[in-house]
Amino acid sequence: MSRADLAAGKVIRMSLLFRVQHLLLTMLLTVLAITGFALMYHENSLAQWIIRLEGGIHNRGIVHRVAAVLMMANLVYHVFYMLLSREGKPELRQLFIGKQDIDDFFQSLRYNLGTSKEYPRFGRYGYKEKFQYWGASAGIVLISLTGIMLWAEEFSMVFFPKFILDIALIIHGYQGLMGFVLLFLWHLYNVHLHPSVFPMNPSWITGKVSVDWLREEHPLEYEKMKEKGLL
Amino acid sequence: MRKFALAAFIFLLGGAFLPGLERDASALISLEKCTLCHGKPEFRKLLVGGAIRDLFVTGDMLEGSVHGKKGCTDCHFDVSEIPHRERPRRVTCTHCHFKGNKEGAPQSDNVLAYFDSAHGKAIARGNTKAPLCQDCHGSHAILKVKDPASKVARGKVAETCGKCHMEIYAQYKGSIHGAALAKGVAEVPSCTGCHGEHRIYAHNDPKSTIYSTHVSEQCSKCHSSIKIMGKFGIETEQVATYKESFHGVANQFGSRTVANCSSCHGVHDIRPPDDPLSMVNPKNVPKTCGKCHPGANPNFAVGKIHVDAKKKESGIIYWTATFFKWLTIGTMLALIAHIFLDMYGRTRRLRGER
Image 1 (tube, rainbow over the protein chains, first blue to last red):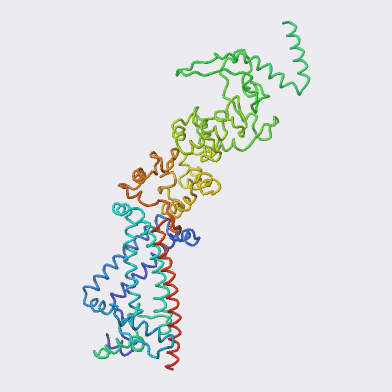
Image 2 (cartoon, rainbow over the protein chains, first blue to last red; image 1 turned 135 degrees about the horizontal axis):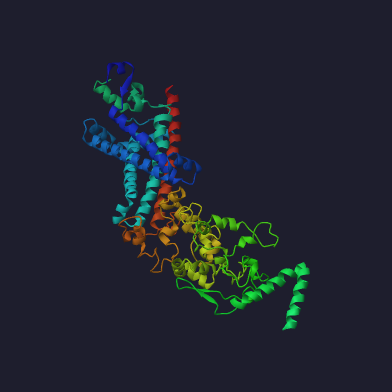
């Protein structure tokens, strides 16, 4: 953290490597969603237009699978980074869901409904971030597994009967829809439309957030940094 | 005998001056003359290859046909002397059946369609075995299509096509469609039901009704109709479930290598799934799928192929889909509720701070 940042009231929240992983994920998920939903809703004229744009049904599949392979590579890299790197290990620890998070969720619910005056005080990651992280992770793992099953259908059917692949297809499609819902109604709200960040939390590009925002939204993290003398 | 000749002469002379009778009279004469030879049942010609061409024709053969009032030379107009020295040419129907003809012979554009078809093009290329009009419609005993005895009637046309397409006819006879045709089922497709009548094209011609991307459409003409399928207790959802499947979607977007109805069910030899010879009999499914999916095993037959996740009968597939549907809807509602609650609480908090 440079002195210039501190002078400007900024503090780093996302390191360069995390921003690269996040940006890759953003782009790949967009490609996967466009190609995937075009197939899922192939009767829709917009979907048909998209499929034509992608060079037909065959090329659509190739684009979808290339993006999927890159996304899975990104996922594998992320897993290793979180498990082994000096930066990743403490991050992962702070992402574990504990009893505190459940308490925080109900506390915020009570506060929002007006029955409590205290808003929960979050650490580096509050229940919103943790729900997003683990929800997306579980979704990506599930959608990757079913996707590989469907991609290598001849190989999968050596082990599984046909109806298992039918189920895999249903899970794959709905998981895509769920991911989309989660991104739009949860993530985009939290990082774009939320009154504290509107129009955008800039950390995914610059990596930095303002010290004021941190004190307001993640007071425990703010205090910890203050204690360590980082601010 | 002399008296008869005189009577005939007077009759002829009279006929010559009565325009209405002229044709019939000459026809009668020529028929009589022709049948001097052609009326003998043993009148036939041994061809070079050892085949026999039957040349036996009598006036009765035209009787009751659409050309009942025509004479031999009306069609065999290149015969000008009797006995004719050369073999008469093949009859050209368009001699009369053209637009605006004075005979009043019925005319349609089918003849034009025929010239564009696989048969017409084979003729144009000089294939003498390719069929002309008379090869399907019959030569002397031509009947209207609606007449069940007609060679091109619904129940008879397969046999007519089978004269040349022998192997295919044999396959068809053993198929569910062929068996139903033999029973006299009116709705069942014979050759023309799928291939068309005059517009018959090769299966790899994009104009063909049985081109790989047209097959499902052609089958669905009957197989998606509850009215027709209901009579035989056959489900109609097969068409919709195919269109929703990977095969069906790729097919609709023009893939020519992906499976269509006939890739799995067969072409001329379509049989019901419980028939051990059927390509879609569970025992034969691995082999059928293996045509495209190398190494297909019995797993391919475990679970319904034409599965509809929206139907309860689909069992676990239906329940998985229903679970995920409500999970998605529930998540959406919960997240929207959370957003509004959070917005509400946040604005209060901001206001309080100010």
